[in-house]
Length: 248
Ligand code: AMP
Image (cartoon, rainbow, N blue to C red; front, side):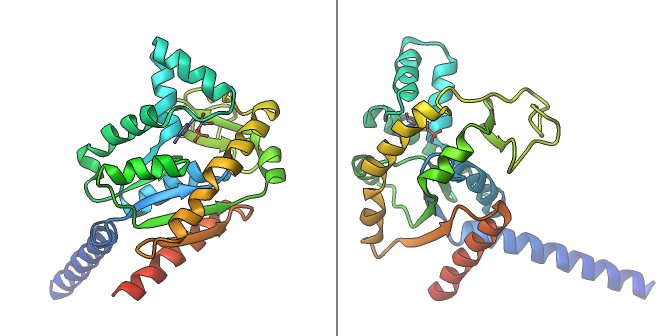
């Protein structure tokens, strides 16, 4: 009988420990993360991983815009044309969608922004809402790799889950792992549009890296996006933990 109670106590203690470590990782640090990287650098994949690991929501500006398009409104049509041309939608419009999303309850312990801000103007708008970013993750990938990856990407539109035919295939061909629904190729994931999207990234988004690097309140993390998904995840976790050590 004593043994039974001893084992039960150990199991309970271990369970509490696991809960507390997960809780403390997400709550104490209040991670307010921005993910930066060129198209198809793996931002969405890593955002989903971090969201699960840190127990905070991942918010993709591209997904927010695509759900506006799915509503079929004239505003959605306008957005679709801009996105198909590989350009940025006006800052005010995307910033308002982000602001609304950040007001939701699930963001109060932190969040991961994937794809916003995408230029210095948007970063300033975010700051003007009183939202202070504390971690910036830059995923480095060169243009040649982006071009090789882009045509193999498939997404599950309702959730934004992203796959790659070669590097991250779904369990069943053409179907989302979670819902079993059909995967699609994005209209802007073509070789023609990607050149324009890369140009937009280099001219507008890259200057954001210097902008955030100069802010010494921000923990700036860099990962090599050409590595495989698991190695990138490991590097991210190591670097996030490194910063915890220096803070405590
Ligand atoms: P993504 O899903 O992040 O690759 O974004 C797809 C497209 O949505 C981009 O090429 C832009 O046209 C538009 N978009 C996404 N995020 C933003 C943003 N923060 N500012 C302006 N346009 C954006």
